[in-house]
Length: 78
Image (cartoon, rainbow, N blue to C red; front, side, top):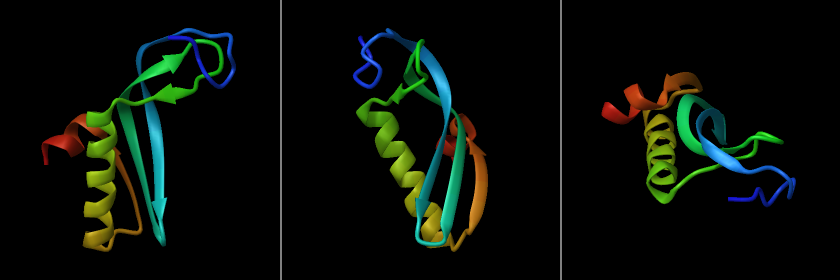
């Protein structure tokens, strides 16, 4: 697909790092599957990945975590 941000690059399957923040919680998730623009690096996530990321953030908030770095595949399995 053509990137909607830069309007020049094409996206391809890859992974990226996502940083999510809510209140005092910062969650960094590495190796997140995405469609990544070859030109600008903008990442696009499907609904399943987005839901998993939000579930991880909700769990971190509930656990009282302030800062955490996770790998997507490992975090998804727990």
